[in-house]
Length: 210
Image (cartoon, rainbow, N blue to C red; front, side, top):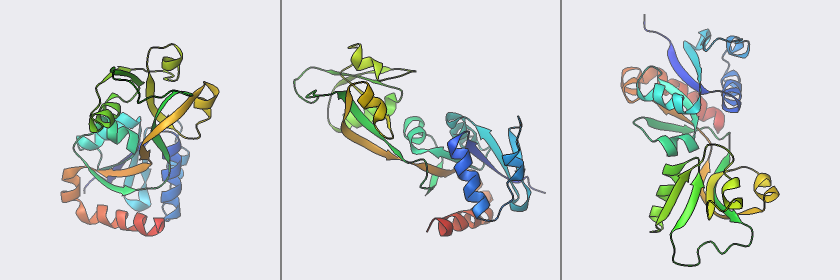
């Protein structure tokens, strides 16, 4: 007997929202709700099992085929890229990538190379390459808002939800970069080998989202 369809979920809010979606489809997610410290959990009536992982690892597990499906934010997909299929925009976890700088800055003025601080260097690089702009990208692991305040960078590319953190630190959005929401992704081989099961689940999800 084949193993259950294995779906990797990004721990935290996306995990909770996905479990809520599965429950609305009629699946019994008790084991996932009462997980304790377990990381692989059954959804027996759906012939599925959930793997809880960090966002980057969701993509790795799906790409390498140890998980058939994954739920991850578009932000991680844009930054990591990889070989998998993006199947459904699940609609939750909505926010955006934005370019921000100190309030009152005329960011696009002048001819010098702009320095950009970000946790997402690939996203930032792609955005400015499309504009034909030369930039120096500095990867920051913590609060990127600090970089313009310390004059390490002219601007930042970061995830913005409400914009409150930017305002409180004297920054403002200069331009939106890309919208973000949770996406269902699929392993390329799984999509062929287990096509009927995966398409059935996707159809259920799409009908629910409508």
